[in-house]
Length: 222
Image (cartoon, rainbow, N blue to C red):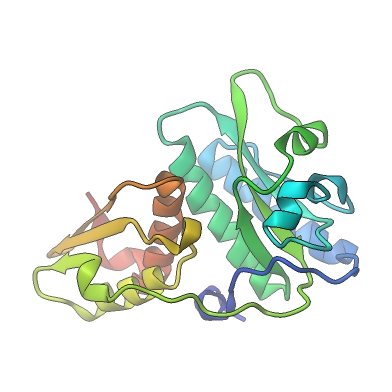
């Protein structure tokens, strides 16, 4: 499965089977995480075979069950921290999808205090958001989406921009709010948050989707 195929196949999954992720898959995930950390300066970490972070009331309220693996998005407290978490977190989530795993972005319905006990947080760093990971009891379901016309403005609607927007529309966002807007003029593209909670994380997620759909060689971020 390619990353483009993973964009279409990946849906949020909150219920997981009691199945251990094989060591070779864990190694591949850690290699991808290490690459993302080098590129981004983040301190993303994979936690496996740990059930207590999703064993509280909030996790049950969020309809999570069987979670025993997760990705912790950690990094320095910079202005672009949330957007980086979204961009690189989704890159890892889609990579996990190509390995046959399911994921879900988690904001409030996880015990962050428990997560912090199972990861390393260096001075000047913080835990941003978490991604649950494992073999889902289902593959999830597609989310409803706003129309492309309401989420972008394009000078000439080139094919690469349309493909980028199609990928962006498939991106997961907090409560499916899709609070983003893309503008295209020639080869220049800008993407902005239009408000809402966790919208900066969402912006990073949709920008990664857009890059995969459009092809990074076809445009410049402005």
